[in-house]
Image (tube, rainbow, N blue to C red; front, top):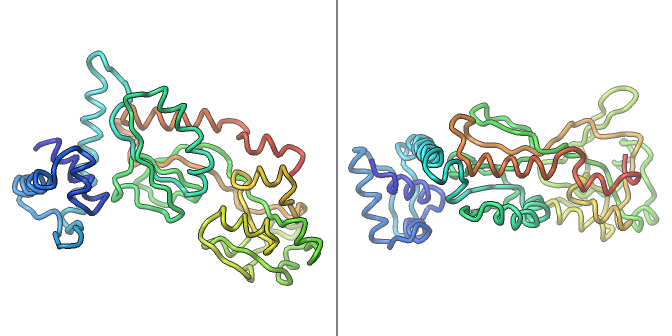
Length: 304
């Protein structure tokens, strides 16, 4: 079985486009189509549906994809383990991350990482939707949500501290809630999927389904709307630390911390035969965000 054909198949699965996948691997659309046809002939099954608009994986293609990824990871690890380039991270590293975290914290870090590993290239996919690691052909996913897929492995990068905030302008106009129950009287700006807020109280956990006045699917957009005085929101300190420093946002309900123990994770398909490029990237992020992350260090004394 041709390794280059497997690489192409994985890229087709990721892009849903044979021509685009071929260009990424520096081969023409005609050659890419022929390679896919040869792989299907070798396996004796059809791997993709072809239409004039796009391609998609067949059921057999979906079953074959994780095995193709495992073979490629094993080959890359074996190649890196021998010769003069032993354990040298190289090739393309495919990473998905939340849009806001990626833009704010991965992009500023990536220059240092690539200077350290010049044989690597990075393919980022920033999205606030949780993309499937295996089906997307990703080597690593950065997640700020609970890991639910038992087939994936994860390394904790940092605590994900979340607080309730509002702008000073909003508080001056509408007052400050004294208890979580008071939120029902206020304008709430919600991040899609985070409409229920759980607070620690003297009587245990109090769950509050927020009556959102405004809902958005991007953390930075939610934060910016609150800076403009649109309402109160739940935010991660990694998203809002600069604005808390400048006083554009202030923490409220300090006596009622959120109950959820959240964290940022590096998630990957397997810890067996972990490719050098994956290990290098995870270790780089773990070191960068170790201890008290810089965004929380800068907030010392401002938030609890």
